[in-house]
Length: 301
Image 1: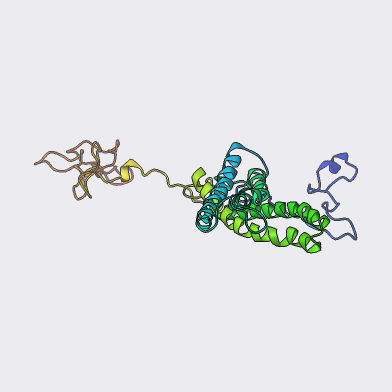
Image 2: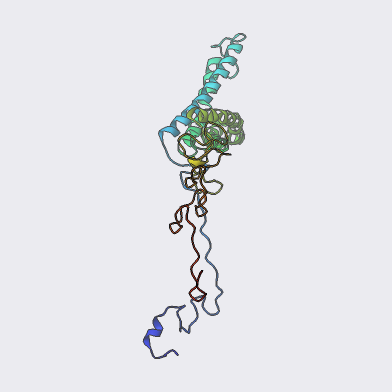
């Protein structure tokens, strides 16, 4: 029986013997809600994230390779067009709105797409870097995001150029074309070229070899097998032959019994089988054990 007046009965915990109160739980009238499991969040340096803010020498190098390659492609393409047109029109002759071929070449290759190059370079260097540990789909997504940043930079510059055209009397249509149509017209092909050059920069910096290795114990990984014991490894003599230096007899040969009598003598019936220790209570070889005498039987004759 338990003593209700014993103070020691109140110190047995919630689940101790003699405790009459229920276990802790939800209060009366309030439904119990289990705690929500913690959500797994990818770390900041995860190479699979689309955005990876930060600046480093590797990020700047990848951005320079991608953007400078686009400029080189534009320069070679514009130079080929300039040489073809100069066969018909003089390169420094005034035509159209008063610009020469050389002035149009410099404006079309360097000045007009300059906001795109600056915006794409800043995005690749600080927001969506060309990381070596990132997979190719992530690199392609980051290149598209960098091209979108360059297109937005063209639209921001178009706000000022369009407003300047409206002041000079070009009308509101100039503002729309400077903000919407011209940036999209120039940004789409430049973005496609940026995707190709970003992939080349990723290959140049060194893409991950053989996939990302996960540590042992992670889901989807298997534990490496242990080393095979030396006794189970076949020797150089083929199957049935033990390895060099071992005392195991070859397969098919019986190990000699060290307790067998010499040839010509009667075998010891008390000798242990091959591979077992001898019986210390067995009689010597050549003697037979006599049964014990019956003390209640008749005398032996």
